[in-house]
Length: 387
Ligand SMILES: *Cc1c(COP(=O)(O)O)cnc(C)c1O
Image (cartoon, rainbow, N blue to C red; front, side, top):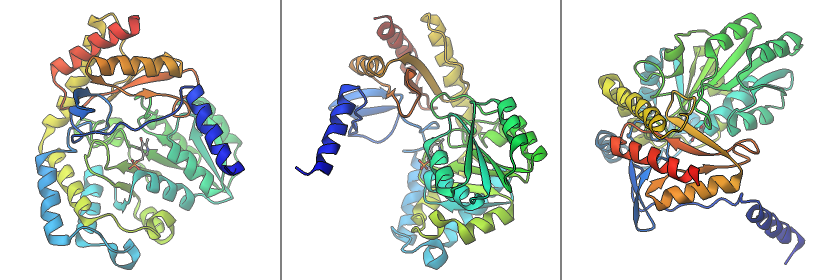
């Protein structure tokens, strides 16, 4: 064996020793409220399909129709010939839905965040990044070569002190709008205020807010009732909206600059047209059916009530993400396994996804869960954590 290969084996052995080796569970059924895993059916609290759209008949119909008309692949990057009428329509529909001037369809949320930060920020910029931001905002900041100032989680005073001290030519505040491992909200209204006072861009990653937050599921901007030309808004399509891809939306000049300069947009094959059609259908469904968002809300309230009934303090989260912090990675993995034995699929989240010592069960709720699913989960969590 070469020394380089031996290093990999050592690295893998170290992951095993510290309970940090990740394995993929192979599903034998679509993403839904119940899934089949290794021959068993489990109530599924692991995904981000918050509105139950990933396998929704209307989204599947939209995909079928687009597939028949447009084929499978886009065949080229958007600036060459991969941009179709469906892509253009999806962008227009999303901009209207989000209440922003213009939108751009990226291949994924990860690609979108890398594109936004590396394009808006250069070496003369400073990026102010919440300590609990998602990995792709962190990677986008690195890729930009800007200075990075990491402020304490959701701490507006700390952020303001850093903005005040900054001498950078360009300032960018970057944050998850709903934090992916805690389900809590960034203080968006106060961030907009700081962005205006300190002449900064505010990059909002609403991966877990779109379809979830706001009275009609239009996301965190609706929830906070904020508008600002400084907001650069990113929403993934792979979570509540049930498909794949992502939108970046904001001022027309920002979007135009991304079209000209964002390397993750320019040098990557355009999204398959059928996924643009799926995005359009998801937006249409949300515009037509207020019941979906309301159903998710009622699932969240039910989970909190069920926790209380079982003597568990409910997570301090009003979103679909409901974390139960248990501490060590080993304890989180054991709890996740014990829940699986009882028929519930709840993943253990461990470092480096969450800070050391805060390994957790990450319960994610969807509009498709039944009362029995939720009550049974709370009962099983109480039994498993009491051990
Ligand atoms: C999932 C996620 C992303 C990445 O989006 P994809 O479309 O899955 O690449 C970005 N930000 C946050 C906060 C996420 O949870």
